Length: 616
Image (cartoon, rainbow, N blue to C red):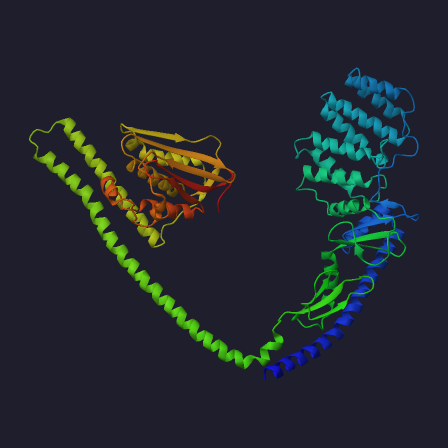
């Protein structure tokens, strides 16, 4: 039966593969036709347009990632290198040398600017006029007359007659001058900054200007994007960079129209039949071209995927595959089924029904067993919690109430009550009342935490505000003799996203614990530190310390390391659990470093935000 089922699956698979292979052959023909159309389009662009315009049109067509354009003799026409003007770009007389001496040797920038202006008026060559105006603007800027220099560049040098004016190195003069204006004007809302930026952006995107060489264009695109990233973005810059990389590693022979690997990783290249255009295509563009043909094929079912696979990639997982064509040697057009178990589903359906029924029964029994065990454990934990809660509440409420009652009775029964004694007893009563209030507040907080009704209101809060709130709450108690309390808060701390009152409550609990478990002379320090994207609140004491085995358990509800010490200092084992709850709600961390007899350091880490951030 198993053999028969396998044979049946193979037969069904073969029939379906034959049917898909016929359809895939039609797709292969249409893909090859689409590829030929792209090559013909590149040939037409390279034949009719100048090299820079052909480059821009080819990239904007969306079919390729970059191109290299060659001239009729096979020389690289774009990306081109700077070419100085053939004539008329050298200084005609000694006046240029004299102006240069005045500027650089005598440092008389005002006179030098006047000499350059005279040279610009007297010259008839556009390149020389542009150079003289550029030198005049440079002298004005160096002489602390920036506004006048900017006016020369924008009002005179920006004219259309200097559109192709270049310096002796073949660099476009007006473009470099406009970049100088952008670097001088620090106020980006200045109208002159906007004018210079728009003019420079227009020059960089004007591929019809043969005077602007590719290296200068790439450099100026990056500089302008860096100066005004929100206003100017150049989608052709990536293509310029890719073309420049390949141009630097051109082989001796360009090759043919077949798709080959390029010198740049993950990119392929091919050359048009007339050898005027070398196209560079990435894997993304290639798959997109296949997808474009796939979208037009409405008769394809929706449960298959057609992928163009590069040479060297294992396509054994494909259901059907065919060569992509002679122009794409090694490439495969692969068809993959979305449901890889299509052939096993029908033949093994009956066996699967019994198998999954048994698995479902066992799984259901296992789930119910786990639920019952979990419920039983929860009930036992709740029972223990109730017992602990009743014992803790009765002790913690009884102790301060008994103390206050004894103090009041003593005052009432004493025949001779002096003012100092009354004050002393009232201070003791206030201390017990404060202790009772802390206990009740902790129980209320714990109750809201358990019922998930403890609401936090987050906002961008300055760290000193939180520290001041916590310090104010303990200042009076920590002012007692024998207690040294130190607060270290550095300036210029970032804000934190926090509920200020809740985070202050967490610090107060840590400070109260530090006071409670420090015997003799108490030395307590609250320190704040700033790390990248984080703020650390540390509370350090010289108390009795905590064994390493207890570090994780001290954050549990009602857990106390030493019941004897807890009874002497008060507390019900909720303080650290409340701290952990608040810190977790702030997406932070709380950690402890301690060992017996060496004190403890509790550290709260909270994510930082920018001071001007607002919280929705």
